[in-house]
Amino acid sequence: MKRLLPLVALLPTMLFAGPFEELLPRPKEIVPAEGTWRYDEKQITIAAVEPPTAGELKAWEANPPPPSYVLDITPTGVTITPSYTLSGHASTSYAWATLRQLKKLGNGVIPCGTIKDWPTFPIRGILHDTGRNWQPVGQLKEQLRVMADYKLNAFQWHITDNHGWRLQSKKYPELSRPENLDRTDNFYTQEEFKELIAYAQTLDIIVIPELDVPGHTETFRRAFGVKRMDEPKVRQIVSDLFDELTSMLDPKVTPYIHIGSDEVKAHERVPGEWLTGWVNQLESKGFKVIAWGPGQNPPNLSKPLIRQYWIGRQVRRSEKEPYIDSQSSYYINHVDPLELLAPAAYQKPCLTGKPENRLGAIFAVWHDDAVAKPEDILTMNPVYPAMVLYSDAFWNGREKEDLRYYANLPDPRDPDFSFAADLERRLLAHKPFFKDKPFAYWRQTQMRWRMAETAEELPFAELPWGERMIAQGTIYPQHFFFPKSNLTDGKSGCVWLGTIVWSDRERTVDLIADFMAYSRSEGRRRDMALVQGQWNAKGAKLLLNGTPVPPPVWRQPGIPAAQSREIPLVDEPWMVRPPLRVTLRKGRNELLIKLPRKGWKWSATCFFPDDTGLTFEPPSMTAEAPAKAL
Image 1: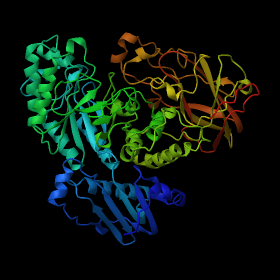
Image 2: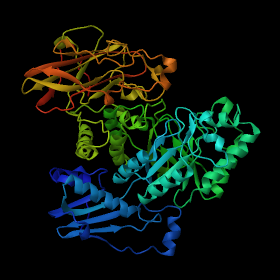
Image 3: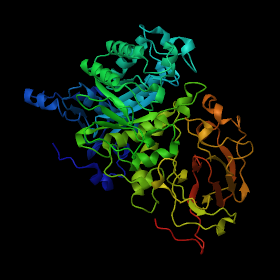
Image 4: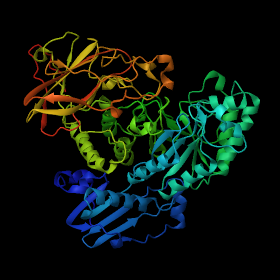
């Protein structure tokens, strides 16, 4: 077999290699060859694989090798050589996923060459919170199909929460009675639950069911008439529910069960030995147990729990515990679509700990607030763009992490910028495959902004523009989760963002703009209510060639903070409202944003979804402006 070279070493020679250069996740190794092959399943062969010896299998029990595959593509056909895996067909599935992508990207014509690939982490997935907001099984299945296309292999099913215990219990049917559920009466029957797990198995995706106890249990306490989770009868009820859950599962198919245990309020805390007993109960049936970290800890366990860390980089990880990374930038209910690119490019999944304890990463869709309809979870959160972008980070990992780029991309003159630009190029090559699905991502790395720090209103050319260029469509002067990525110390209380738009002719175009960036959880209480006739209550302004661009006519301004969690968003997220229509003159146009600082989020989203015939240039620095380091 030809020697396989690392893909990174081939990039200079592969810039025009077509589909190979658009794959996501990027394969570990590619050797291009001359010629092409026209896709024909009759010409695909799966090579036989020698099973491991008894000694090798014994060694695998502690540290199984990753499921790898080799694709040899020639003008006359393709050979798939999978690795032998304890889980069955996973490596073959990954090979087929690569071939499906190559077929789409090349319109049926695939370049010849050899691809060798394997995942860096064993767990790579997505979480949906169907306890708060139920989704139909068909909507979940559609997402599983896309997960398989991008080699994501774990679906964490957060199936219980304060608003609903959404898994039917035949032993305790009161959990599913309408008077005990909130927002919707919907729940999953046991048959639907098993149906989804079986469907996921056909895609080589494991389901991680999560029954969240002892926190997040308003529905549970309502159903059983208890005010506190440490009331004696609760211990046996939860044990019964775990028994009922495991009776529907095969640990060879569904190896993990998640017990939640985070955000436990004072009236929800239970004696530690109860938690330990539930963990021992599940482990005795052959399941591996996952719990959130931080959370209430079960004491005196015989072996470490698997932890799923949710706060980000602030939490100290145990060196003894295996863990899954669900850091805050993986909570896409707080993330705007264009913001995804920076963490996908520059944050390292499973940053610390022993290699054998770094199990992988799961991004979460915590649409905590009420929705008008289940589809809003997909239109108001960038679920599909996140699948495609994070597939690469979760499959390949990252060599290093740079938290300066937690949300803001590097200056485009910085060599680090090219990685994000390449990742975006690949992402956009896949966007046409999502024509029937919400996919709110457009090219942003061509933008060229500069920032001026002042509350004073000055002409465009006289603003104190900084040296740094900003090449993105969503910008955070200061980030609400991680201050190391800030562009400013915020002392001025206000920044201006400016770019020069050159148009090849006079034209009326779409412009997307937003200066509130509401999360889809925690209600509007974390930020200021919308005011009719204003971009936001903070005094944000958008000007084109010196003329104010009016905001949309808001459908529900002034939502009271106390009620905001139960009043679904309608047109507040820019992803679900029509773009603005603005007229550009031929030649130079000045686009300017005034962005005062107030509230939780301090951000601006502004870009042209169709930039055909447009180019972008940063404002010239004024003589008084300080030259800031890149």
